[in-house]
Image (cartoon, rainbow, N blue to C red; front, side, top):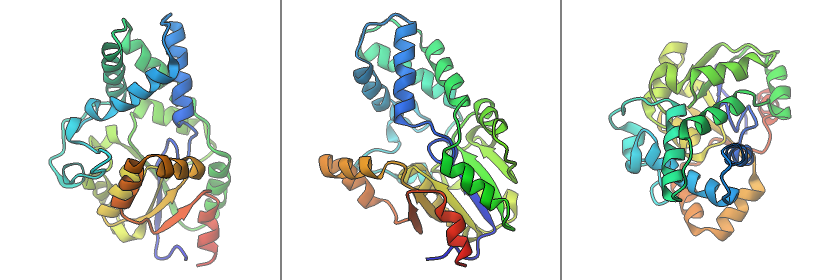
Amino acid sequence: MEIQNVELILFDAYGTLFEFESDQFRGAIAQILDDQKINFSYEEFYKTWVDKYSESGVWGLSGPKQEDPCPDIVLNGPIPRWHSQWEIWRRQFEKTFLHHQITGDSETAANIVRELIAQAELYTDAKEALSLLSTFKINVGVLSNADEDFLHTSLDKTEFSFDIVESSESLRIYKPHRDIFRTVCKMSGYEPNQILYVGDSPIADIGGAYNAGLQTLWIRRNPIKNAEKVENDPRFALMLDKLPNPDFVTDSLMSIPNLMNDN
């Protein structure tokens, strides 16, 4: 397959361009528990913290879940009152401390995550792909569920300039809602089918962009882990089965310039 009729390539940030995934969040949890002198299993705390994400997010318990990963309310429903990603992290920590009956400082914990994610480095393939794309006559941008402070700190550390950079904070909308993608379409002047959205999240990135009419490319950063999840967790297989098929699937962002060269 070839990338055709695309005028703008939009990238998700963390987990797609910048290396900050489950292992980095685990490291942040370990640092937080150590700093706060909390003697508790890092892994158990991390799993609970992840489980608390949905109820801490902008849609609460009506948001994405395994049985219905992209409920209509998060795709097309009323836009909820905006909360910073920092506030969502703070709520996660607050709920996790309460769940395990631990006395902890949720604000300090959220601050550490924000500080660490701001220092995230580009994946090697992201750096190489962006370098090659700069030689093409195509616009490149970033659309991320992120706060402006840590997103721009991460971007400023790179050598690349982007034609458009928007976030859930700048637009006051969260992926996977249709309006965050459609707003960027209007701002860029391109129709949805002229934009390729590249992301690692099957829900926020692929499900959301597909619903808004954009072309989609799923970057599978951990194909082995995904395969293990499908084999060991029927709920994960069900989630993937309910999501739309992306236009492209790849294990490396270097596939993008190659797909364009074939065009």
